[in-house]
Amino acid sequence: MVKHIILWQLKDEYSEEQKAQIRADIKEGLEGLAGKVPGLVEIHVRTEYLPSSNADVMLDTTLTDEAALKGYAVHPAHVAVADSKVRPFTKARVCMDYEI
Image (cartoon, rainbow, N blue to C red; front, side, top):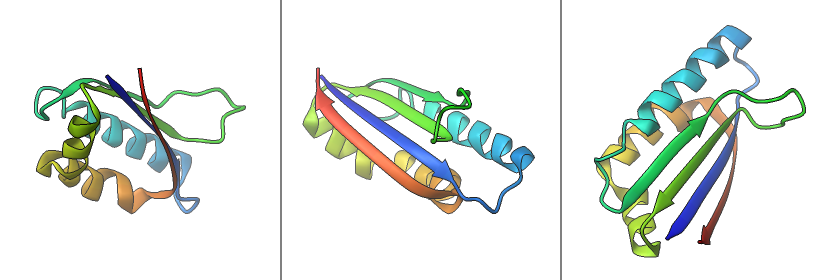
């Protein structure tokens, strides 16, 4: 099994109201991939955080193996969500993948 963890910071230009909607849209879009991407075992998006955080959104996914992770990265449903709900609104992305 492989964990794929992403942390994003949203662009500064958005108001807090806009950021709340963007976070909700990211959560809905990414969690909507459950059952659509081969090898994707679990997918959770965290949008609520403590004031000590320096990220706005966290993606926590579990995939069957590294091949499934590579497939997830290029899967059309994932790319569509990333291109429409994530990339246009984020300024920074940090990723960590590891075996469990």
